[in-house]
Image (cartoon, rainbow, N blue to C red; front, side):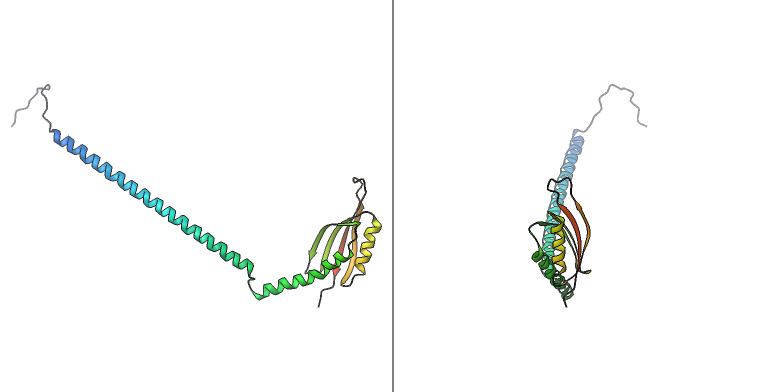
Length: 174
């Protein structure tokens, strides 16, 4: 057996090249990890850029597609329905335009083309002006009925206009 040395003040012999080699290996490993991280960051940035380009192109194509759909009707049935609504409402609006008086202000016009009904809110200088409009609308060709659903005088206004609600039903064109 080898004799045991119990001198604790003796300097130990170490090999300095082993520590240096370990430090160099650690630095090389650290540099390799850092370059791999840089490469992965660049790849991620390129991927994000490509995804943004693709989403921008897809959005642009969707906008162009929706613009084409808005410009062209989806089918002939929709086009026919739109034309029928325009033809049904046109004469009634023309009748309202023809019977208008300068002493009357239309405040709300609500059209229901399927029920052939117009709900009309207006203000007139006097109740006689409103009733004259009701008579003119009633005698207009194409108007079936005109009914005065409500009227009141606005007392807060110094000119005291009359507020009137009318329900007008018209005959559909054939």
